[in-house]
Image (cartoon, rainbow, N blue to C red; front, side):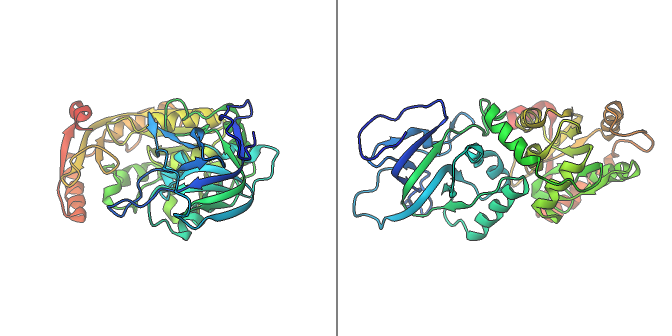
Length: 378
């Protein structure tokens, strides 16, 4: 659909996208507190707001519709060529790969796209963040330029694709068109790395959270021939290549698994060890199953969650005590390891020693929340 100044209503098309001439893309404005007000989107040339330019996460919009800037209130920037609206740009790795990619399927359609235009989520986004996310996409086989705006931009020809993936029950599995596009992109990623891979969180700050006794887990998996992979020490291209190459992958629930989902393939076996007593795994599991249909095992043997008193709730910063002996038994049953020799639970003294170390690093103590109380603590 093209709009050249008429007042024809916005229509849904079987194509899954709308097309406009001279549309205005409006980024969020700066509020009284100096932060962005969370309102952004697209207006047709006749000033009609394009409702499909709003993106969803969970059960709500990521952003609200902005006010149409008054004529003469800003210096209008004109962008020639054909561009697609990508929604909201997140600088955070995990949020970008789950909340900023839902419209990228348009790149798989037979039309020229000069860039994907984003409205920023937060004030102060930097050029290096845009470059980083451009590289992230290239690592999973999606090659495009990203344009993140900080002022209203008039676009010669703007495509507004439907959001077909995101962090909500209706979107996390992606539409067939979206999944097909991502699978075709993943097929271009060259696999390189070990067949047995453990995704480690060692080396991350204490407030990133983990299971207690990861070094014990690493020792047991190394004895089984697993390569211990620390994503933060590798480029995104290297991460994608390793994930593509592995035949068996073990990890706790974490953001890298969303990245893995883009390049995973059906021949892989994946085991995910829960590291917190909250539902942080459903979205990961559904994305993995939909994008690659691999055999995914979820292991849940949490005995207690430990939270830092600065945060006081179970979440991404919390640590957990898991029955490592039971974890080993589940891995053996799934064919991920070959022996239970040496597998055991941590002793109370080992748990106390690690908690003390974490408390010292965080300059604040950790205290336990029993699993049965975890729901009320979230």
